[in-house]
Image (cartoon, rainbow, N blue to C red; front, side, top):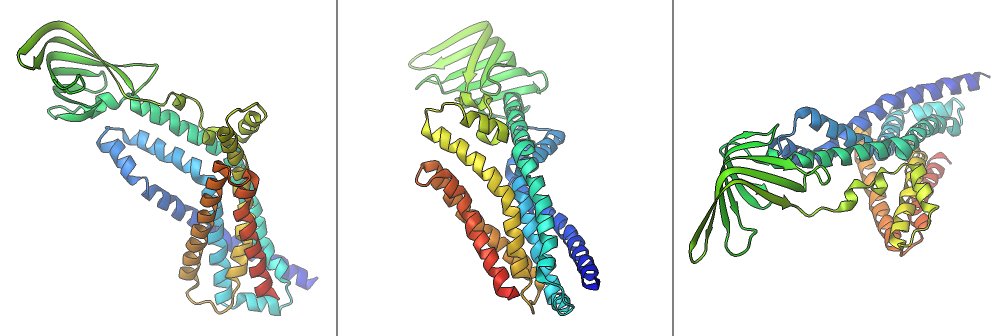
Length: 368
C-alpha cells in the first residue's frame, strides 16, 4: 500500500515536472518556425504595405496550421529534458531502489502523450485545416491590394505587372493616382510611354490580385518606332493581368478536414496522383497524432540513461537530432507515397514503426 502511494506521488511529480518543459518546448519550436517566415513577413510589411494587424493574423494562421506537427516535437523535448534531469540527479535510481516499477515511471509520459496526442488529433483533423484555409483566403485578399500597395509616391515601381509605373501622388486606399507615368514593354519590340493626369486602379473581384483595370484620364500615348506617334485621350483603359492558377479558389488538400478528405476518397477519382495525395493526407494526420506516444517512449528510454552530463543541453541536442532524423525519413516516405513507389499506408506509417521499434529497444536496454 505504501509502495502504491509512493508510486502515485512519483507519477504526479514527474507529470507536473514535464508540463513547464512542454510549454517551453512549444514556444521554442514556434519561434524557430517563425524565424523561417521573417523574410516573407518583412516583404509583406515593407514592400506591400500590409498593416501589422494583418501580419499578426498571418502569424496566427501559420502557427495554427503547424501546431499538429509542433506538439510531438514539444513533447519529445519535454520528456527528454525531464527524465534526463531525473537521471542526472539520480532520482531515477532512488525511485528504483524504493521498489517502484519502471512501468509506473513511464506512465506519466504516456498520459501526457495521450493528452497531447488527442489535442494534436483534434487540431490536425479540424482546426489546422481551418487555419490553413484562412491563410489561403487572407493571402489571396492581400494579392488584391498588391497593385495599389506596390506604387509609392514619387517612386518608380517595377513590380506592377511587369510595367514601370510612376505617380506623383498615390491614394492606396482608393486606388487613385495623379500625374501618372507608365513605361510598358509588353506591347512588343516597341515600348509604349503613357502619361496621364490621373488614374484609378480597379481590381477584378473575380480574380483579385491578378486581373486589374487601370483607368487613365486626360493623357497621351507615345510610341517611338521609325516615327514618333502621339495619341491623346480623355479616358484610356489598360487591362493587365498575371497568370494565376484558377484552382487557388478551391480548398487545397491541407485545408480539408479529415471528414472532407474521407468523403472525397469515397468518390470516384480518375487521377491516381490526386487519389494518392488525399490518401497521404488522410494517413499522415493519424500518424502525426500517434507519433506523440512514440516520441514519449523514445524520450523516456533515452532520458533515463544514468550519469548523463549536461542533461539540458544534451536533451535539446538529442531532441533536435531525433526530430531531423524522423522528418528526413518522413519526407522521403511521403515522396515515395505520392509518387506511387510504395503503398501510401506503408510509406506514411513506416517512420512511426521504425521509431516505435527504437523506443521499445531503448526502454528494454535501460530497464532490464
